[in-house]
Amino acid sequence: MSSFYVVRLSCLVLLTALLTFSTGCRKRKYENPITKDTQQPDKVLYDKAVADIERGRFEVARLTLQTLINTYDTSEFLAKAKLAIADSWFREGGTNGLAQAEAEYKDFILFYPTMEEAAESQEKVCTIHYRQMEKADRDNNHALRAEEECRQLLIQFPNSKFAPRATQLVRNIQEALAEGEMRVSDFYYKKQSWASSSNRYQALADQYPLYSRADEANFKLGDAYQKMGARFKDRAGKAFAKVVREFPLSAYADDAKKRLQEMELVVPDADPTAVARMKYELENRTKPGLTAPVMNMLKRGPDVHLAAKSGTPSMTPIRPTIPVNVPIPAAVTAGTTDVTVSTVNDSSTLDQSPDARRNAPGAAAPDAAAPGAASAETPASQAAPAAETPAATDANAPIISKGTLIKPKKQKKAKAPKTPKAQQETKKSN
Image (cartoon, rainbow, N blue to C red; front, side, top):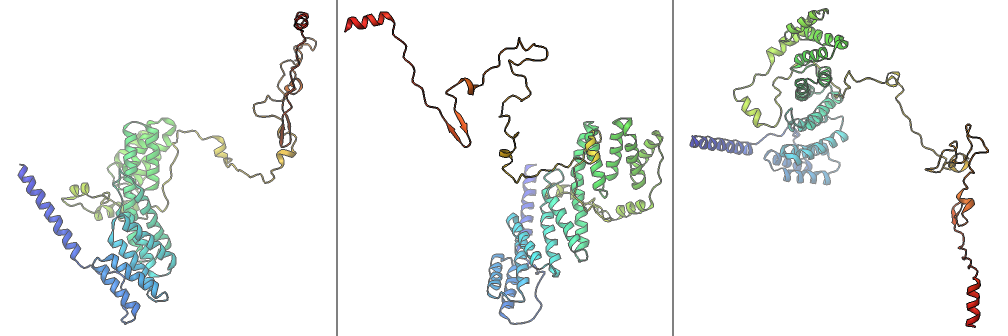
């Protein structure tokens, strides 16, 4: 049995080596060549760099392109040369290469925003983060960055030829992000933490309506609201009604209708547009191959074969929400939550105001009763004498003046008078 696994592992290693060797030796055509036929020296340098990029000699190509930029600073091929440098880093790959490629593409968009290649550069930046996405239950930093960059392409270049692909990438990215949110929501749902699960399901249903499991999220949202008590009956009814209306072909539609009937709420009709959309998704959904389970375990990125193929994705980032069972203060609803802070420009206010330094830190309030002061219940004749202040009783107390601290001089101790016995002993000794 062990020999079988050894042979199988050897075949796998050999197949991987052959694929790597064939990929490295194959010449990949460059996407942005210059078709102009001329013998100008800057064009010659550019053609040489493109040939090096196609053969995988990226460092040599970048040196040649940098020579072109430094030598022919007014060349008509200057923009193409900067784009070729970014493409060389993109083809080289790796964490460092992709980071350098993103920086170069961003510079190209900044300096040449009106060129046709600017949209391509933005699409490459989106692809850089899309390729580095982790699975749904892992870090989603690259997924969020990819979503942001693809949305930027759709906003900045809506009419470019790369817009349809960017739209589908956003759907794939949001499928992965929604799957991560769904797993967290299911965790709270299984723990019967209804407030936390309903909060997560609500944000998921509002933010990702194209998610492949949005019908399940809405049904569980209604179930969580229903188990939170009678005062959340309206919210539960809205969630169940959304399943019936917007997901009529879902497996949860019949159960949602029964829940509405039990709650004595109106059962809505199915939306014809939603019916057509669900039919289109079922017909055009990507079918996984036989090796898909194994490949999904080996590859780095998430499984997005269930992502939607139609519909407009959400163009705003997801925002955290507050559970509905958390009471909202009246000040929040009134709109008086803005707190302003201003800087004091006049620094002499403390010196000019008579009340600024009245009470030293730790001192008693001026209206506090002194230990010996007479109160309303104690007659003035029986009141204890007021304690003298340290400044009045202690002659050695320091005198504080504006900006200086003057210490009093030390007084010499007075000698005690001699007793008669001591005087007699003094006379005898004389």
